Length: 90
Image 1 (cartoon, one colour):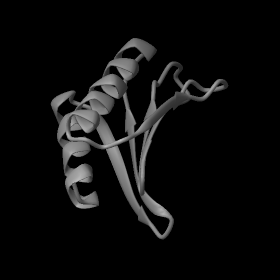
Image 2: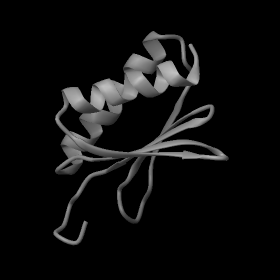
Image 3: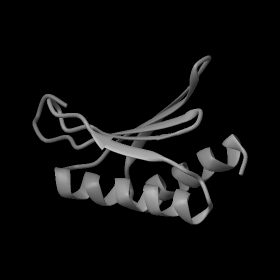
């Protein structure tokens, strides 16, 4: 699967879950950031993205940052960061 297909797949999932997102095409890779209200909904979005990427045969790594609870999914040149929007300052 090409990077553009991975990006389209992730954006499609984010839209299905009715999330806001921003995308950046940086020299070091492609970044998509999404906001999802609450940690449970953010985790649901992350699991859906991870499952669908793996269904397409794409290896990815998922981890959560300790301080802010951001969920990161990294697959080659594509990074997806999900902000769980826990407090009003996000």
